[in-house]
Image (cartoon, rainbow, N blue to C red; front, top):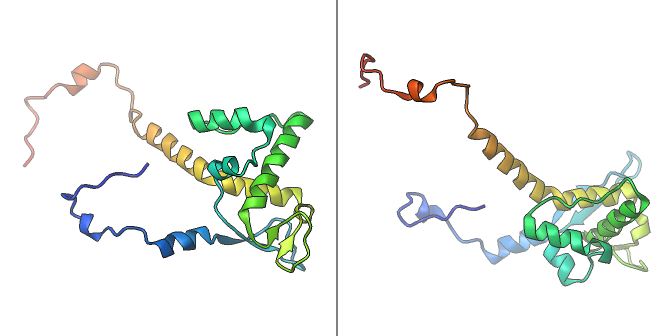
Length: 177
C-alpha cells in the first residue's frame, strides 16, 4: 500500500504526478519470451496488464470460478483451484485462456486468425497459458510476500524469559553521550 506524503515531508516537492504518457507506456505492456520458444523458433509477445476488474467488466470470468474470484476480491486471499481433479484443471485453463485473450496485445489472440498480427488460442501451448496466468498473478504474490516479510520483521530477535527484568534500567550502566 502506498504511503501518503504530507507537504512537510522534505521530499514532497520532488514528487511529480504520473503523466498520461507514462500510464500509456505501462498500458502498452512488456515484451516477453514465451516458454514454448525454442532456439530455432523464438516466440515473443507484448503482454499488457490484466486485473480481475477487467475480467469482470468483460464478462470473462468462468461461471464456475465466479464464487472463488468473489472471495479473492473480498478477502485478498489466493485464488485456489483444486487441480487434483479434471474439473479444477478445466477451470484453471478456462481462466488462463480468458487472461490470455485480454493480455496479448501483439500478437492479438482472436477466434479466427487471418492477419499477421493475430494468433488463435490453440497456437498457445498449455505452458504458455500458465506462464501468462502466473505473470497476471505476480503483483498480488509480490504484495503478499512483502506483507509476510513485514510480519517476520516484528518477531523477537531472541527469547527472553523475564522481559520485565531485562527491560529495567540499570543504574550502574554508563551514560551514553
